[in-house]
Length: 216
Image 1: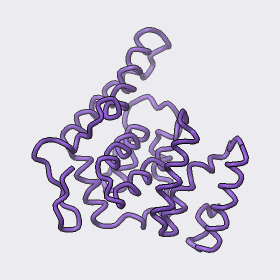
Image 2: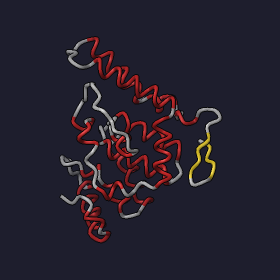
Image 3: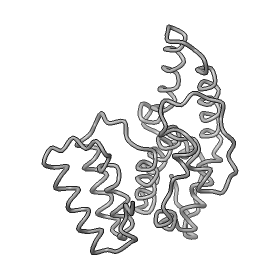
């Protein structure tokens, strides 16, 4: 199924309009159209439209579980719009939703983690399902930013703790211990939102994007 109309802007624009009309009419969206709109705008080269679509999703589905690919490209849109702190928060959320997506993009041969996955959306196979049109959206400077994000000491520390906790859930039956581990994992996922900061905002850290210094 050609979700992105092979990049044909006219067909893609028409598809976006159909999706938006259906969703705004109250459709229950069992097939996840809402998760594709932002990426569709990016494929069209419409960054403003992508950001508006992601904002619409955020306001319309405040309690939705979301999709890791959707959040990954949401982070990309924020990055390309120079919203560096917001991009960091969104990319961190995407990372915890699926630990394999970022390694795939930056060329790491990622092993399968021996952890419990809440759904197939968190698995390696889902992470690798990526149309080439979406891969091409990442510029060299975007990937450089993503590598620095992934290797950041705070990000790495929290990721390793998340994996450690996830490993504890293997074979753990429902009960107080499982609930406590899940609570700690959710706390890691929501850490930035509760603190209102980003790990890349550490004192003295400067980003180099497009040859210009960008303080986070």
